Length: 174
Image 1 (cartoon, helix red, strand yellow):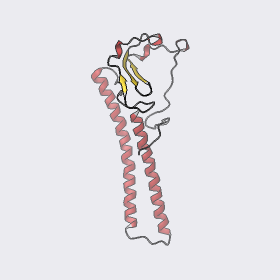
Image 2: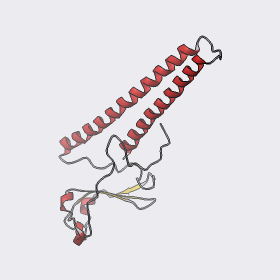
Image 3: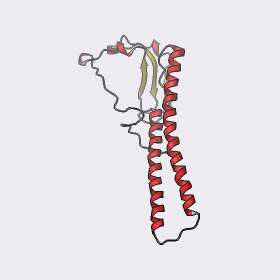
Image 4: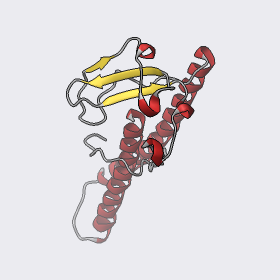
């Protein structure tokens, strides 16, 4: 989740870079054709500014690629070292309310589950102290029966990296 937010912010920053570049170039073109006098340093400084904006745009794009490849490398390394998929980041902010304090069950595998989850084994479990939201992981999610007779269904994730489509968190940083 945090990776998606950062990627979306980087992409939003890239879009703002293009808007600022368009405004800068528009002002340069306007001043070239207008009778207004500008100092001799205006055009070289405007060109340097445009170059910096383009560099920022390209660097942000490179950072998006580096972030996604680093996240993939970390997941692969965790899988190689432990033999199982990397656990969810339990120390991060709550996805529901943003609170940072969570109750983490240190031995979730010792908890007994009932109903449709009776055969599943928990590997992670935490509860947000603010809103009660649960975050959990199962050793084998394929043991969870799916169907109306079990009261379960499969939902597809609507957002794909790196586009970030479907993210609902408002942007505050760039």
